[in-house]
Length: 195
Image (cartoon, rainbow, N blue to C red; front, side, top):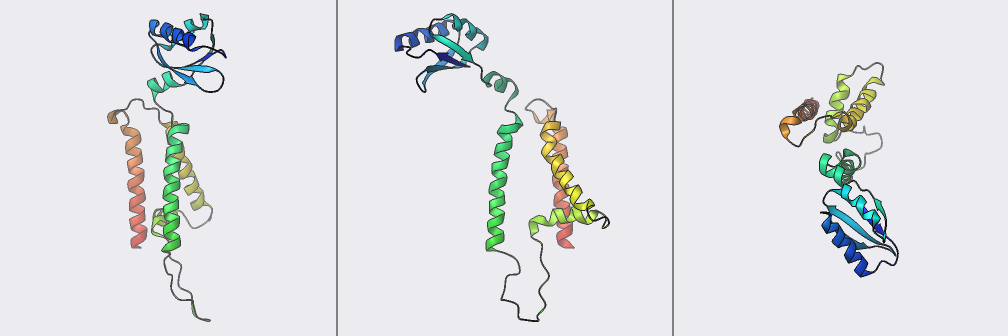
């Protein structure tokens, strides 16, 4: 929680408020951001902080997500999603650099009338090609639609996951499903690469 104090609160008044907080079993840190001093309550039962509203220089209390984070942990969106997106962007940048500097089949310019070599798929697209090869050829929209739906399913797994607790035995269904998906993609990639 953030305790907002009135403008012009002196250092003695601020020390008095911090002392009253200690009496209530709260701990906090004074912040000087802008014209109004703030106190960030970092410890203790935050419900007791409401008693501080009776003090003369206390203007208001702004709740934060600290108690919920301590009880439930950080939510997937946006905290872990941002980290996963940043890691994905780094991986995408690395793949883009590899594709730019080491493209397959680069050689001399083709002579007029010479047949062009067949295009080669990059190795990292082999699992997706394996999935597309499992789809029927007609109608042609089924394969790409299945890929999009599988991607949407993977992105929605955190919303579907209802397990609670940090231990592996409590999260084994989701971990087993993710491991099975990863193994299936590796097998499809190896099979497509060998074909």
